[in-house]
Image (cartoon, rainbow, N blue to C red; front, top):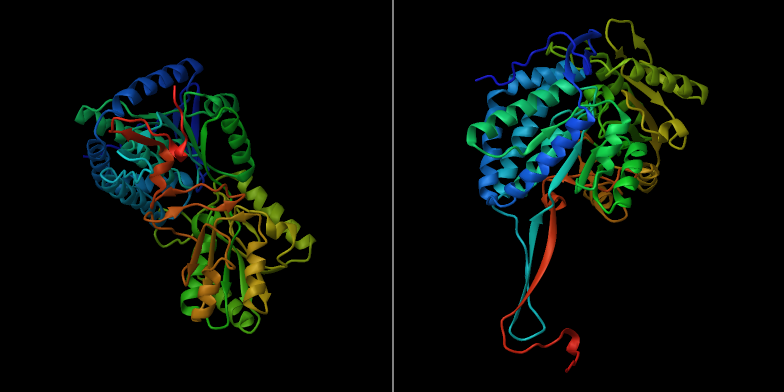
Length: 489
């Protein structure tokens, strides 16, 4: 059954219109929320969180399993919508839905593995252990570039942990959020579960700020720019809430003199142009050993010439548009600044006349220390530069204020181990012979420094959505104190 046949008709009053970045035409609209509706939503989320936390975790996992099945049934529909609304290629749109499915499978298993530890007490006839409890309400604020997958990373784990989830998506991609919300609501109603998923769409900063400052929301998970993430962290921390941040990146690939270029070239191209350069893990800097620099650049230009640009729903096209007109303007401003500081355009550098917010994938020869190179330019601009020895290359990579993803292409075991050692990459993700973009959900995803320090998806990321409690049980008949303290009344 197709659950995603939503009405994409005329815009309603108090609504946000979604624009197709390929055609610049409206796709549909989603009604925004009022302050009264917001308050009602929070009250219902609170009430149902108290119910949901008492349902056994494996039963909560069954809910996510059923949602995963519906995502499988609707993968093609939802993948097309993701591509249409964001402009990313159809393969990337389908891949994003598959990431949700994978995350659902992971969360189902995790629902039976919310483990605590047991510890030996220093006191006789005492037992110590720790356990994990739900937080209550988890707020998830997602960006336009991954309108559904990042929500799933957070929501599926938060749900199996016993929380309710309130989702505030980007106002640039409201239809994807509405479609997923409808799918989830259909499943939970069919199974008789309480309402545990909530969605509100707004483009008003005042209401978004109220959400961030709301003491009823135990955790705010935010994906977006470092500048906005810093503001959110300050507001949430001020009220002693929990915050999970997945912010900007300025990711580098290092290619050493031993690298297999048949692996490196496609990884570099996809990393730089995937989602038209609008990923937090996009490859933005390429640091190449001087002895292979000319050979690699020539091969890279050859690869860029093969990149087809156009309607992302046409699977012959490898790259779609930027998200909107403002993104194109920022791309052109970056190109202007690059030329002003002496950067050499090796390929591309132009906007493509409309309709659609298309630009050319761009290669630029630069110096690593330039301000423009050290900023996150959210478009398909790849800065290329040379190095002499690997220690210098690692230092160049780590010079960034961000610390999300990194990669080294090498066939040298010593180089690989150095890159992964404490003296190597300072990023949350460090890869050997694969690119910076396209993480699997089994590992914890996130980065250091101005990337925010958060971790989502796999490994032990589930712990972010729960509170830890240490328990000590005295099963004896005396009351010994810790550290041998003597106290007598």
